[in-house]
Image (cartoon, rainbow, N blue to C red; front, side, top):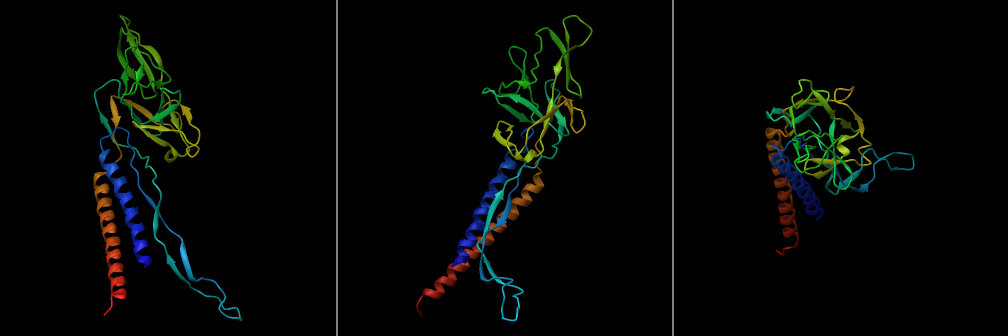
Length: 261
């Protein structure tokens, strides 16, 4: 009975839905995390009577047909790139992006990764890096005798060196934009990679037209809404339950058909 197989596709689809929801909830407090959702598509149909076919020699056309679907599948899991809440950390090397743009990060293999996680640190040489020690691009190195580390909204990094009273500019933090942000490939560790779907990065300074600004001593929280996720979880659970009931009903119908009286 086809109903059992159709319902099984629904259960598998909702299982994936629950997995994504659980990942969203698990990363509620992950800096710069962007939630995902599942987009579903119906599967191929079996035409018992094809709509639009001719029903007589006089040219009459069938206005509606008889079609039986074969279930559902997960077509995509797009990432929602909306702005997360900015929270104060009181740490001078933390920086958040308010608006569009990703920080550029140099990976050990020479590739460039992109992130919204601005929880940066200074390594033993004074270089500004991620929590995993990957350098921020363009490179920023803070002298050992520097104080008053500041990053303004346009990404200019300044310190006061030694006994000087005049701030010294160390460099400029830049942001990258993509035509299709959802096309970026997540690689874990709050990092994304460029793909053919995302398009090539477009780099500029914070505050330039179309680019966000920076906010020092702040971090962007994940854009996960707990109420929305719990509501989606309940809906997915009910959909899974209803599909399981279809399987039980189909099994009972088959049992009634094959069991001798």
